[in-house]
Image 1: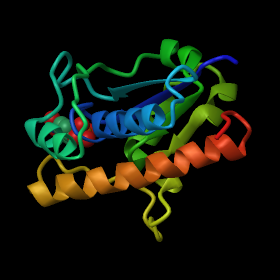
Image 2: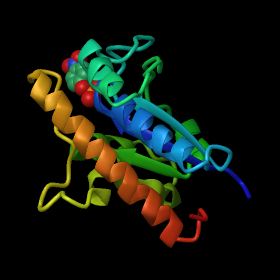
Image 3: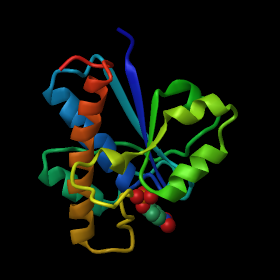
Image 4: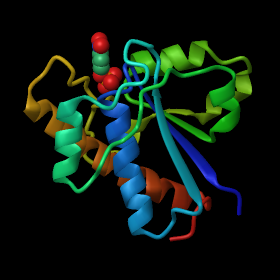
Length: 164
Ligand code: 4NP
């Protein structure tokens, strides 16, 4: 089976998308699906290229047993559309920025709002930006990305892309 390639996207690639990447990778490893899935993250902006995730993101992830070592990079078109099967965006701004960069309409079916996979989202469709917030906001992001990771894994299984 070909590997499923998943890309998480936020603005700076130092808070939400590395948290999502780490959370989804941990889940995949726990389910012994590591050889079937590859995971990466990036940002629509280049402010923090080459940096490790924000210390608050790393601290929050570490409390859940996740070590984040990703270095920030910027979303690159057309390469990221070609390289990835699922492009999961944290908010509507990231989502529309990515959509605007597509060289082919067909790639748009790869692009989703990640929060639609959160079982407790209610009417919320976005993972809120915690950058100017408190440590509680980072904890909330971690909770959201963990639930949405589980929802996305179940979606892949239901779609027949992965075996449970
Ligand atoms: P992220 O959060 O998009 O979740 O990585 C942000 C990180 C940096 C900035 C904004 C949001 N910034 O303005 O530098």
